[in-house]
Length: 516
Image (tube, rainbow, N blue to C red; front, side):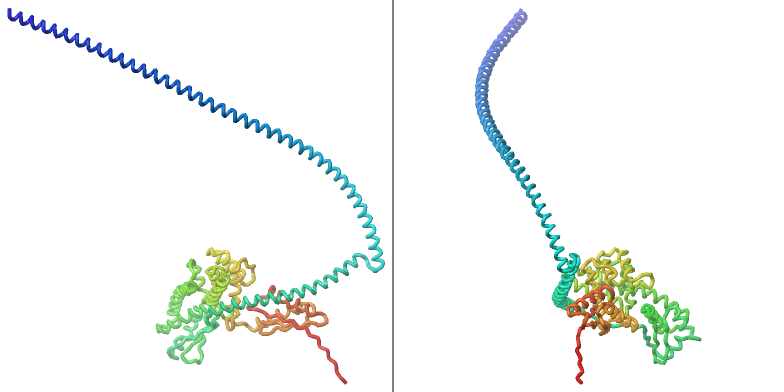
């Protein structure tokens, strides 16, 4: 019974609990719906407010845009009106201009008609003047007894004579001024350069003396039946002169290279003591190889002395060969170094490239190193060598033009030619044969003898001066200046000579009477 009652109470409790839960949930839902409705109302009110605000702003913006548009339209209308007024004014101006141009065109036509009429009148007047001129010319020809062409020739001849006199006078004055100025500047420049560079002048000889330790060595050098001396002469190409000179023999040859090789070979034979044909040939081969190294050393020494760089090894060897070449007794390598130094000094005085001038001066006679091996002049050979080793065009032109074979294209080419002449013309620098000396004097005298009015010509001071005696009845004082100028020009164009040649023209009239 108690159990049933307990179960019943539990069931009643569960039922009451479920009812309470349902009622609570129902009240909770009603409260949520109420809040939701409140939120929706609030949102609707805010949306209405925003809508009213946006509509108001849109209306204000539209009103502002309308005002601005009206203002802009008003401004455009004003501009259009002004433009229209300007166009109307321009059209009016164009109309007035058109009217003015029409009036001017009419005036020009009238003026042209007047000019044509005046031109016709002038032509008629010119025709009448020409007729009168021809009549006057005929009357003048009758009066003067000569035609118009004859009178023209007489006037031209007179003018020509007057011009000759004036030209001769002008040429004399200008030439004197130019000579004084040019000689002064040239002498200052040359003297300055020659004073700053001074080297010894010595001629190369064609013989070399070899000192012997005793006279018995002469017999050993000659050898049995002369076989040793024959072998030496055969392999070296040098003549041995063995005479009564004590303890010395002479080597004779025009080739300095051969004489040097022969000298060293003989000195090595004397030191070695074994003198026989086989040993002579061995020492000659050894000396020849050593000389190749020595040649290169000569070239390197010359380049170093001048302070030059960027030379090909083969070109340095060719430069070294110049040490064993001579020109009129002057060592070509020493001459080339001297020309290079003088060229550098002259280039410095004139503001030119000193290094390029030295390079051109050193290489100006490079062709003489191998001109005995290759056909052609040393100028042509030297230019080919310079092109082969890609030397500067100015250097090539200096090589070609230093003897006048080509026209110089730069100041450096002229500088090298001047330095070459200075080095060659220094006292004692070169030897010259009697035959060449006489030939040069004859050529110098022949140039002046061909000029009309020259009576006699004399070459003086070893060809450094030429004196010309003219016929006084054919040549006047001013004409003598013209002859001097013509002779100077011919000498410069036709002759090759070192230094300068002074030209003196002598004109004198002698009146002689004998009292009896």
